Length: 245
Image 1 (tube, rainbow, N blue to C red):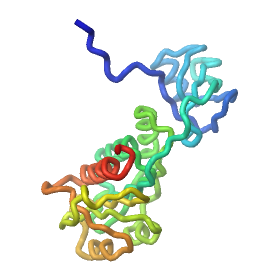
Image 2 (image 1 turned 180 degrees about the vertical axis):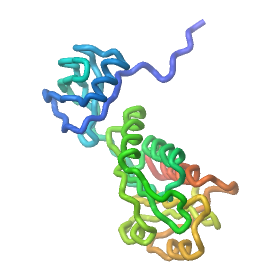
Image 3 (image 1 turned 45 degrees about the vertical axis):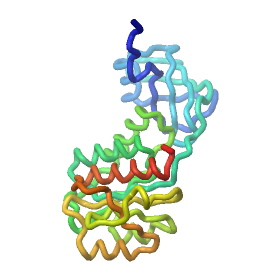
């Protein structure tokens, strides 16, 4: 009887670095990264890993020198070109910290190009720690194989968001109803907007519905949590109009 294959399949560790990558370049890792590779993964001189800088694709690197809190990599060759992802932004009203962290992690995995916290009248989170969300996004990208990190913006008001969206289609997840997502979503530059735990106010709903390119969509008959709605809408876009097709 054949053995059941392990999942996920064994692969080289992946690491995001802020230094631009090129064949032959030497990369000095920070103490945290050196500790992770050396003490957690037990990699030593000569060990291999994959690295990416968020713009130039993925590269194979070797550990050139390793010490207790220091490690130097040498870049060998590019293994993957920069990824091409659909031009979709996800704008969401921040919720409690744990749920927002989870939302950012999964939106990175799903392939969002830009993540935009939106402060609405019923948003419960008073502030957003972008440095923390960036760290969560980097870890998610390392795990899921992305080579392009989503851009995470400073929080915007609803009006600021609508003023900055340009000509892209706005898919507005309106809890009061709209066109089914399955028939509404089309390929092309998109902005998905989902609301806070208490929903949008009547004034906000009117403002969004009146915006140029706005399409109110329905995410089904059930009441979804704010973070679930954001990810459901993004997943629907990827399946119907994005790179899942």
